[in-house]
Image (cartoon, rainbow, N blue to C red; front, top):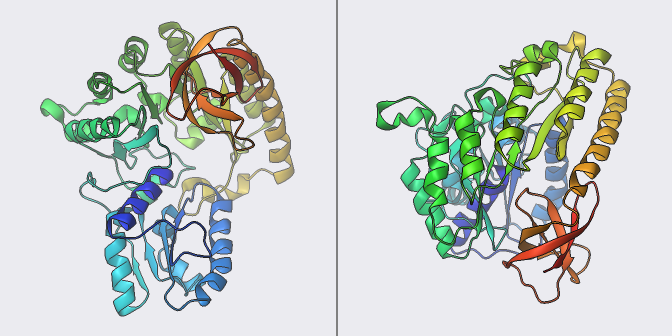
Length: 428
């Protein structure tokens, strides 16, 4: 979501006549877009702003802007800690960025952090990082109340875009050369519930997938992130049936312990979560499952952690995004100080989790060796131009020789090797 917000901010700047700088040193304007999911994101923000004070002091006309979730949360604290910042703006002020920049030039430093947003902007331009794939926001905000999460505070309640707006955007993207889209929402499962389409207050996500699947020229549709408690069979049926929807499901676990899940207010238990996993495996052929896990949530015992490991052993996820618990001011979990886990214990559990999942991931990715897959070429390898990278249907990063292929090609490849983190292939 933050990456897409940055693309839209860049688009608004270019629409105003600006040109993207090749480096920080030759830029006149810098926008720092912030996250606040973990504590080190806040620390990194203020450390970065301290470094940028030197950059700003070298030219009186330079402008420094700060936006995103940390700005939404901290508001005036950003200016108090870094008074050299010209504009502080929240997540709900994104489309006002040029107006606020102009105001700061006329009147001096400004802070504007709206507490809510009534309608979701649909026409903000974007400067996209990829030539072939695009992020498409279908919903912002969250109506859940997970005790570890700051998102409802900094993104607000759920607001969905009209299906016609999304259809129009994706159609234009495909016309411009985009071949793959990723639908974004804090909880895509509940997309459309607030729109009351046909007078019904029900999710409209699976219907949206069917609509987008009909777009000529579009090769792939991905989505993130669903919430397990709202995951319905109708969505799994759509993933299984629709040829352009990738057979990849991200289903965030967070913990395998019923005790911890209740403290997190996740709305499901271990048994129900595993039922969702089983259903995905049964309904979707060769599905690629991924998940999120938080290690060291307040009160997590060794037996609680073992329950999490047991879920990983059972579900055999292709990949797991792992996080060490970080208390966020403004969340309920931040008040569980008496139950905070010693950092050494968290680090030990994190490494055990990582070791287990690395072994599982390696076994899972080896299943592709000897198979042919469709690979969308996204870019050159970061290490050498002799190789290019892309993703197969399941979302797995795949490397291939750059001979006879170009960015944007959608090619048949033979998978000939696998690591725990990526695949290697050759052109068929």
